[in-house]
Length: 161
Image (cartoon, rainbow, N blue to C red; front, top):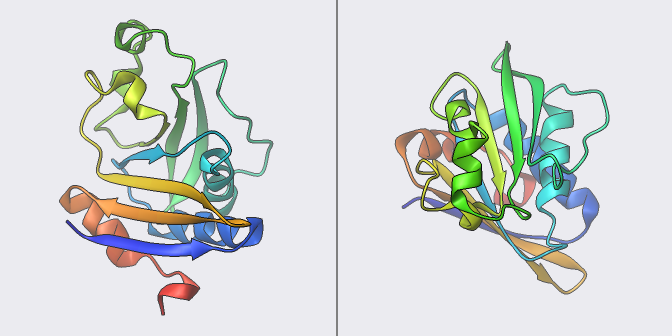
């Protein structure tokens, strides 16, 4: 399994990582974000969305469970759906909402709190683990599929050089 790990010293570093991820995205990716409350999952996703061309407000989908965004990846428009499953009462609720239809297509799915629906979620291409560490956070990216490995291969982040 291919991995990348670094420390993000502050919010600006988290935003820079989100921008680097945006440049490495590819249609069809399923990215699962893990971390405690306040670890930076939504901040990372917000930075990724803005770097991929979304100019508007990015709200946490805590209550809606899913928010779709039109972004540009590799010069083409794709839909990135940001899921936040924290308030999911059961995995069946994920299925009943029809969310599974967004996976494995031309779009990109970014899922916060995937453990809330792990029995019914399709396999992730990449997992991102965020942990609060001092004033910043540690981040680990794990490629779990060939598509996830290609994404990590394209990742250009300053502390990695």
